[in-house]
Length: 395
Ligand SMILES: Cc1cc2nc3c(=O)[nH]c(=O)nc-3n(C[C@H](O)[C@H](O)[C@H](O)COP(=O)(O)O)c2cc1C
Image 1 (tube, protein in one colour):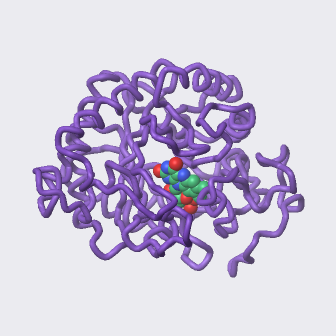
Image 2 (spheres, rainbow, N blue to C red):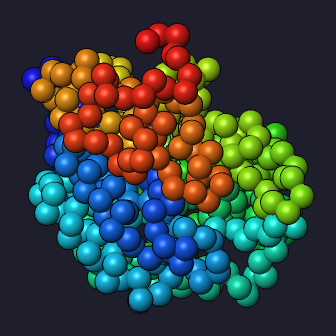
């Protein structure tokens, strides 16, 4: 086998992931408007599970009842049967893949351009944020997920508490990182208490916010060390997607955290080099390891080639490779890599056609699929793919 690091298993609290390829969370727009699981959504995840990936984080599931159209929800018990069906279908498709869900509280948006900020929460409202994460974690366990990821990255509630942009003055924000970490730590500890010591619980953080008042590696390394100390089972490193430098929305449209420079950093486009965020994962892994923790660090951000993924692991820059758009484009990337069929991988063009659909609350598909497909065809080979929206220099 060519990629020994990539295809070595990793175990967290007794749960073994068969390889180091981890599908990071990706909103699909395939739920009902109310956030219920649909057959189309199940089909998408079955297709991804079959491709040989080691772990899949099912897309961000909203934990509160506030509206957010076509986002998966885990905000009440009525969502559990659909989620249970989804997990069972994925497990049936691939008995080895480990299936997690990302639990997330978003900040509210209005078409008037108004957006909720962390400064808007009253101190007495904060325990409810903790309770909602706990309730969501209970539902995730009831649905049969193998692990849970707490979303502390990008534009949402917990990342906005962690961020240097947080100007709260009540002991949960401001210049003190300890204060800014307080609520995310309370959430982590309450969820850990709920899931117990035998259940993997990871966190996703921003390695850097990429906006002027935002956090950098100087803060994210300290945040990662703290969660390693608290026993988080992995630190997934993402970046950007902050509202602070988003462009002013057109009238009648909500603000879009993907529209500014920070937004563009989350899913690096074709003009960024492959492995755009490896330096962030590397910095965080070094800090975590030097502090005496072995907590696995997940890197993501325009990793498209198995050889490159193997090099990142072999050079000790990360422990697990996160792939999002690469697997939307070609879910068989892992199997093809394992079998030495790299040339048969249909490569993500990093054009962000998928992400633009997400911003419009539409179904997220890949530009390279044949017309009318909501998941990759089976088999899917380069000769069947539509040309990418942008021709990559290196292709
Ligand atoms: C359409 C789309 C939806 C995404 N949804 C989420 C999400 O729900 N939660 C999350 O943490 N990241 C989300 N991401 C970010 C990805 O997980 C990933 O970190 C990013 O795209 C970089 O990895 P890639 O280059 O392999 O795509 C999303 C990305 C895209 C393109």
